[in-house]
Image (cartoon, rainbow, N blue to C red; front, side, top):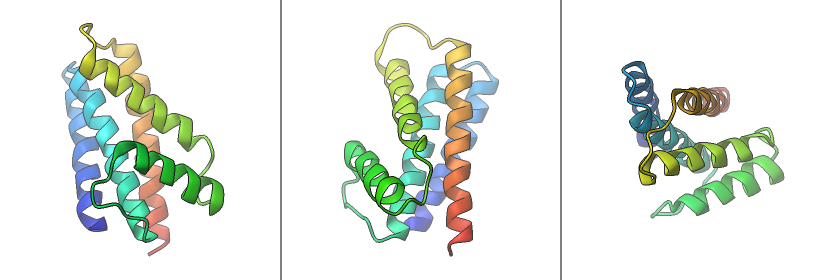
Length: 126
């Protein structure tokens, strides 16, 4: 299961970067969030923390509670970063205005950082 979510995260961050490059900031924001979400599911799975349905709030709360606070595997700033990435995705998906480039730039950089942090951890803790 973990490997499949790693591939999804890789594909989604690449899609976010491609969409951003052509000015499709709403789609970039959507894919950037899902890259983070899938990376989070993968790292939770590495530690046996699984939920067959992977609800978004559950994934975020387990990442925060188990891997940030309890096990101290990730920095505390990961929690608000993931919430911010999701908030921007919600804006891009559900609000009528087009996401500005400045907001999409920030969100993509945060997503790249979060995904990279998780991937590095997974690589170091095989």
